[in-house]
Amino acid sequence: MNVYRKMASAPYLPRPSTIALAMALLLSGCAATQVDIEPIPAVELPQKWSTAADEEQLRPDVGWWKHFGSSELSMLVDEGQRNNFEIAAAVSRVQQAEAQARIAGAPLLPDVDIATSANREFPLGGGTATTSASGMLEIGYEVDFWGKNRAGVAAAEASLRANVYDRETVALTVTSGIVSTYLQVLSLRDRLAIATQNVGNAERVLKLVEAQSRAGAASPLDLARQRSAVAGQKAAIPDLKQQERDAQVALAILLGRPPQTFSVAEHGLADILMPKIAPGLPSELLARRPDIRRAEARLAEANANVAVARANLFPSIRLTGSTGAQSNALLSLFDGPNLLANLGASLTAPIFDGGRLANKRDLAIAQKQELVQVYRSAVVTALSDVEKTLGSIRSLEERYRLKSTEVEQARFAFELSEIRYRVGAEDLMTVLDTQRNLSEAQNQLGQIKLQRLQATVSLYKALGGGWLDDVGSHAAS
Image (cartoon, rainbow, N blue to C red; front, side, top):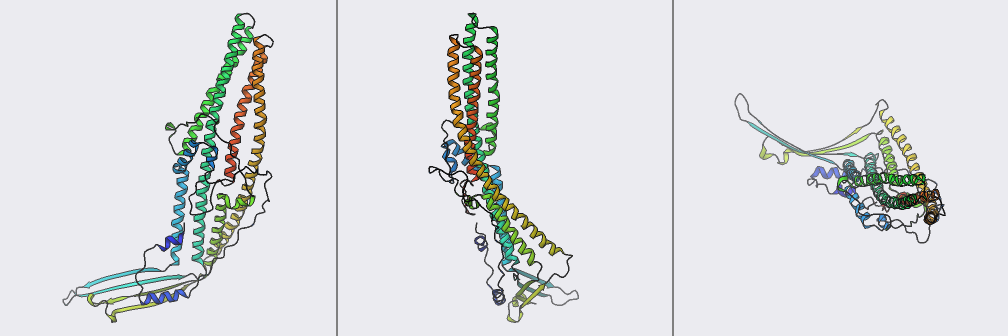
């Protein structure tokens, strides 16, 4: 958003008269002091991440969520970015900051006012009534000799940038939440399918135990154990259904929808792809993470506020001028002898204010020093977010590989124990153990798969998503 472009679109002033031209000549000789903005403090950055990127990995882009391969997810993200309440509130804050920036730019231009009056007097003792009128065009301008007004504009523009970066941070957080919650819904549906399958396995074994019990080959204890196993498998289903409903409610809130009218259509994670992300260089985070850019903009705003507070300690100079006419007759108002003009200048300097201005300066300096630490903290936090997420992805990939092998072997063990139990070569306790091991391994595998996908979402978020470094852009994050 170009603040000066909006300021330039203000209505034109009335055509300048002789006094206005004189004011323009005076103003042209008053060059404003440039705002001295201190550089952003350097933070030591590592040369590379501890986990190297593969050649097949892709850099994050604006539509990073599309790499999960779900058209439904893409539609939900688009809907959330349009309707989410937090994003809408952040957009309103940007609009407020735009207005504040335009307000801050107003003192850089002269104030122009027009004052008119007319009066008719009727003598009480008789005589002729008289009419008088006046019209004055008044122009005032504060010479920005110490750069106070320009520093105020710089502070307002930095605040605007901070609010835009805040909007992008909110959008990135909301988008990540939508993707992560959507994946959670699908994972819970997978776990429900596995739980239903485990109930089927347990009921199949129960029928076998019941048949052997009727034949006298199985004891009442075996029958009770298997019935208990079936009940335990069924007991897991209501809790999973409740978790799935809760996740859908959370997703509906992120979309700005009533939960009663929302339902995810996809049934599981089978068709979800696992994106491979290239983290890039650590130094790139300074430009990619909107929260870092927000902290940087807040620091720039604080620098400008220090310049304003320092300038307030010095005298202020104001130039004034007016031109107009005054006459005792309306028809002769603009006759030459009735025209008036004047120029003036005033200087106001603080002498004693109980230390108020000096303390405001000290306050601004202390606030800037605080924001220096906030900026450094934001950078270090961003580096740690990426590093932890990369390590988590590497660990989860290894865990998923090992757990997949465990599930395969647990399924084989259960099937083999069931066959051996049928022929009397194995007791029921072995069947129950292998059945329980398979159920736990499948459930853990589903959780690890979800964690791996959500770690990918976290990495996208830690890298700044697909955010573009353009204050005027509305790129989805």
